[in-house]
Length: 76
Length: 254
Image 1 (cartoon, rainbow over the protein chains, first blue to last red):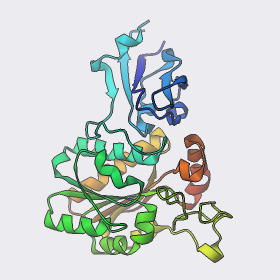
Image 2 (image 1 turned 60 degrees about the vertical axis):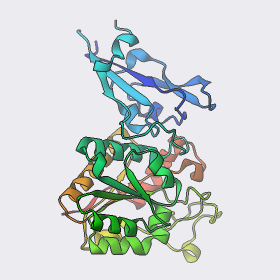
Image 3 (image 1 turned 180 degrees about the horizontal axis):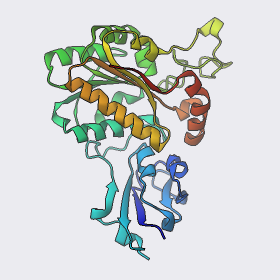
Image 4 (image 1 turned 120 degrees about the vertical axis):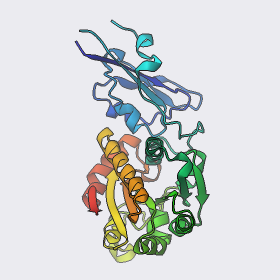
């Protein structure tokens, strides 16, 4: 079992759906949501939230700084 | 198993938008490298705690509106003249951290004389140079850094060296000048590259504190609208075509 559990929070209305976080995610957690935000962009979301390890790779490459990353250690 | 509400508590926050960035929505296209570099500059200023001592000079180009996004003091220069304006500011306020933020059309083309002589004089400034091989704001025309064969609005059959000349490696040129103390070329396409670019920007601001001279950081970036590609394809194209011509790494560090 993973030692760390992570989660991201995306500012849906500011996300422009560029998809850079999708390819940056090492555990394939992030996908573009089939729904769109107010500007018509498919925003990023955690499709597989169980896989998130809180590495913050998505936050680093996000051009619009819409991703906040959380990470907590879990007892195995 | 823990659910998402348990994880997203303030004490577990490991990465968030730096407070140096304002809440304005950036006008850049989706996936633009400018957004990443704005964020890195903000994070470096936050970490060095120099928000009230930093003055930025924004160029003409897409990043002309950088003053809307970073919560520091700004001046806006005429096309290509940001190093000249920064020279004046840094000489009047030697205790301030002065940086310019320029694109390749601004710095390598119309502002070529200004950057050459600012670096030659060794002005105590930081220059951040975004090289995306195209004029992004005006509609994707050829820039001095456009690669051979690259299709732009003004070279619809690809850049021909007989007609348009060769791409200019301005960073290597500036590294030969005695006034520069730190010349490097970085990228921002992967998380690792973003971390390296942030360290380079941080080092450049620390050089300003040490009064070492001009620090020059080239960021090889993308212009997915100008290149007519998706952001992800742009990064792939950049790695395959730009990096062989513009190799990453430190060119000068004294």
